[in-house]
Length: 177
Image (tube, rainbow, N blue to C red; front, top):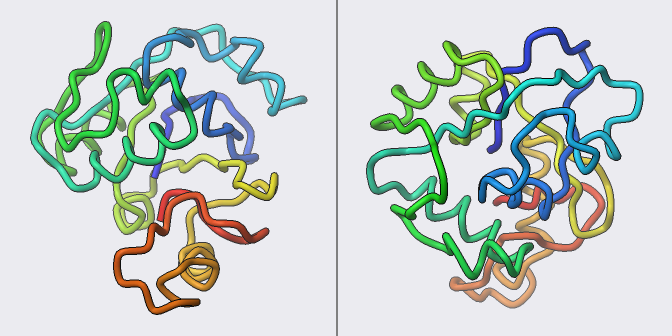
């Protein structure tokens, strides 16, 4: 799940589309007040601050799932860095070993964006983002969102154990399941 450390924002969650998130992680969008971020966050005082990308330094299933989603929603991301458990991120990134390292780096770095598993967001009190799902609805990572993605997948509908749970249809589906 994408998480941010953006001091000064009100209680509303930051909203990102998949393509905008991919452009941030590719290093294409470099500032929080970029028009492509502001477009979906009207009324939210986005800081004029540089985006610091925090990524895993080690091979990770979390990274592989996250990059699989980004590659699915962004042809540019698919071209590079692409789907990988240990991608080569373009430009300058901050990297940390394991979820604990990422959480620590996110907490200590104002302006940071990174990704961790859903359970870490809750356990560590991190600020997750809302993503726009395939139906155009803004959703937050949750057990209900994971369930909706499963119910709208070939896993549930056809019993296909290899069916993707990423970016499933359904108003409540969390796209990175």
